[in-house]
Amino acid sequence: MEVPILKQGDFLIASILGALTDTALTRLQENLVHAVRKHRSKGVVIDVTVLDVMDSFAARTLRSITVMTRLLGAKVVIVGIQPEIAFSMVQLGLRLEGTLTGLDLEDGIALLKAADTKDGARNHGR
Amino acid sequence: MDVELIVVESDAGVMNARQKGRQLAMTIGISGSDLTLLATAISEIARNIVQYAGQGEIEFRSIVRGGRRGLLIIARDHGPGIPDIAQAMQDGFSTSRGMGLGLPGARRLMDDFEIVSEVGAGTTVSMVKWERS
Image (tube, rainbow over all chains, first blue to last red; front, side):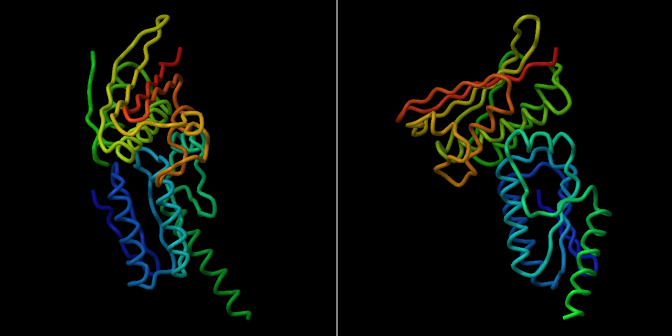
């Protein structure tokens, strides 16, 4: 199943719509990085609300997306991690270090906007 | 359910196996976060099969012990086997593209966990998730 990537202003939104194979996750990684470049996006929200499991491959791929996107000058927020997924991630020993997380899509957009404003203020003062 | 078998030879098989496991676990009364723990453990073990052996199978059996029901999952492959199981069960150890969390991670997610491996013959992982008493 493909993950659609929607453009909303300066941001991109990737909403995972169901269980994903490793191949689909890898494709999301490639598509997102290219989309960030193409649209000169400042941030990406990845909504994982309906993801059935967050295993080591999924967590590693999300972390790679965060790092690659950062290299292009954009930020990533992962939103919608369900309580039972958080529980299994901790049991499994998975961390999403250095990755911004938010409760839901709205929260994710707000986090990106806040980060954007802060960066803008900092650059302005230079 | 007596026995259900899923062939695992691709990442689609990995997804099928964890979905089948979750579905069967529900029918025997496993619920809530236990379903996610179980599905995640199956995902790790099934991915190991695809990565290291290329192909294998996962068998699901409903079992009863002391009045409690559980789902027994047996993952078998005829791959290269694991030379040093103690090392493979350590966090952070991985010879492939994983994070080295597959086997030790799956053990933490399940209630019972056992692994038998013979170099050149293959690997069998047996694990159980019990319903909450």
